[in-house]
Length: 78
Image 1 (cartoon, rainbow, N blue to C red):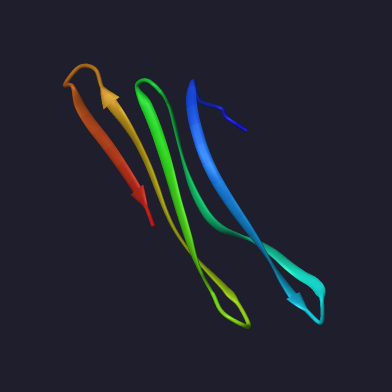
Image 2: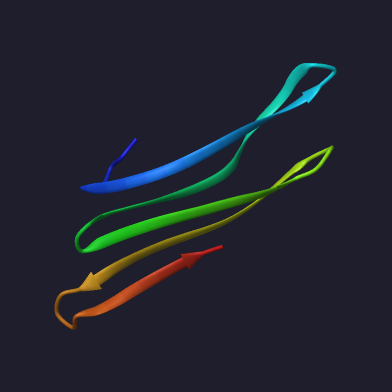
């Protein structure tokens, strides 16, 4: 769901199967971003998948432009 004026995203989900039965579904990859000036945000998720687990790595960036100083304020969450 988009809560921004502008947004886009691509999501990939994967399901682990054991003996042909789905046991767990998880987010495998995501690239999404959005903005409604002066604020914006973006997310990138990648995952390592092996025979027993899914390990996710994500980067979330959020920023804002200060109209008084014209500087960009960036918050990065890894």
